Image (cartoon, rainbow, N blue to C red; front, side):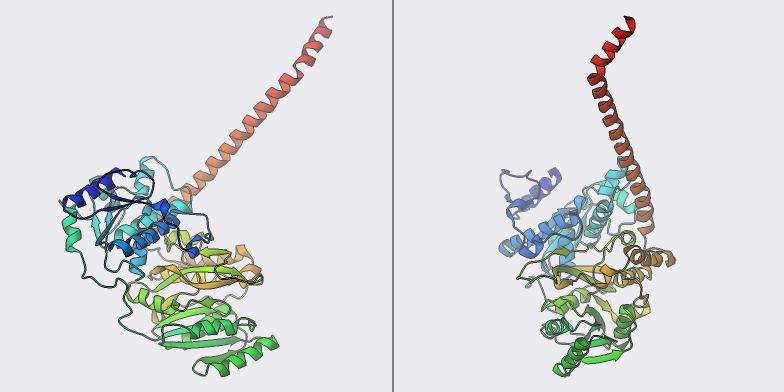
Length: 488
């Protein structure tokens, strides 16, 4: 925190009003600063829903970002500076890149240190996915910030050697650079400059119980340049066949198509092939879109022309129980990388995402294996393996219906994951830097297993020694008596 305090002091010397978001309780009581303890900020209800995976530094970064949004609404910041170490600014930068917030704020990254360099100085490899994700968050926050300041030459040289972009010689006075980067004042969140056609493709099979509610959420979208395709993949349930026909009459502007049963991957590929939109948003026939889902998707991907797709957060609710407003089983808040970690976990998100239609077609769309699931995860990996890039909109844009009979829950988990690994095996090369991450993870995870195994063995030996000592103490009188008996 000392370097952060020094940065605040530099801001004050220039006559700027300085605020500090205290994330660890170390700046309380400092004079001359507006200190805002992070612990004083309660996240909105959606962000209090537990994440699908274990808590990570990306989740902590979400708390930082939400607190900064509230502070910015009150104080109207010109610049927000954050240290790179720990990835505190990760979700804040992600939110700005997606067009959610901070549109008129300069986000400045100060390279104080990075976790990977500190780990290597300690001669240690990454011990788990959380460390890989933290490395990714730090690099993303630095490279995607509006302004980068590299006051530590050793840290700067290290990240430069690891291929980080944007590493520059430190400015004599970074505050001047921050001021020069200030944009014109605006509302902070702009509407899309264009309104390109977006195709929403709904794959449907025996889900008549849910389709009307799903289509109603699509009809309620705030973005009106929509083409909606609904394809019945050979439903066999009479009620589902009837509902499909009823919905076709209800929405004459939508295109309802029927085909012989071919599976979810093939059905989504037909949606992709039939799509007329510049962008393509696949959607399951039982999920529920938030009213601004497509609008936010379009805003995000239009602001990031280098991305081939963008995913988002979602909230899952239990289909077996009534869903009072705000009651959810879990949330999914994907990090978006590193790509090497996608061989172990879906770091990208759910099938409901926005794709550049032409890019997704060129990448081959979805796999069509009918015996396994994870076709969405596989498609993301395929897109990146072919040179595409995937971003994340850090907000909950739809509700996911968690059904006991969902395809991903009735298929074999090993085979589902193997499907994704096969896509990695087919890749000629990983994106720059990802091979290094993958091999370091392989070595680090193996060493962590060995360490835990050794610790467990040591624990067993200690328990055995204690039991043996207790046994010796308990049997000491009997052994003493036996020795006396033998002498007599």
